[in-house]
Image: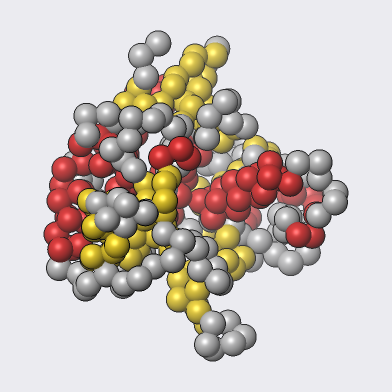
Length: 303
């Protein structure tokens, strides 16, 4: 995408970041499917690939339908009369039923598959930050020995520096246990949890593990938040009240299942001097804060 727009954008670095954020949002909402260890065209080349999800819809908390999936030729795979009713907010596409309308029956008749909200919003087991880290430590201890990895970067959760991006550091000279990532020739970066000794990988646990349904980055981001919480410096978020909406500003990436939950509670909006921003109705604010604290170990910043 970025190569196709070479020379057409004034700030390539900013555009690259925008493309990455949009792709992450499309994966989170369910328009794109990210699959690991896929063989495509050349059976000797395996990696993480993105595929368009088949057209479908999810009905959650009320009667509105969230449209998901992509088609080759249409942004929204619906007849013109129905497509005109679609409300688009960022990557979210919703249709609200008219009075007395059976929207579920209409969308089924148009050939869209229904995905249950329970299946689409399914999130990992509720664990405390200590339980999550202890489980990762146990699996790392029982994993195989480390390997020589090039271009390895570690997320330094011990750092006093604030901010997500500035905590990514070169592994050279590092000792301890860290969330790691490394680039690969094909597909997305590989993520994992590693024990290092003076920059050398002693033990390595790669994400996702076999049979794991979550993306590697989703597992890593949640573990990062747990590690920082255990350090006594939990990652904070900002809340601002505007009329009947609560604005949530996040400064750390979150898993796609958490993004889906926040989008269903409210809507994703352009980032307000942070990494991610969501607007949630005031009535949903207590539940949203409880969700962020319980599953992501986030704390509301003091005003």
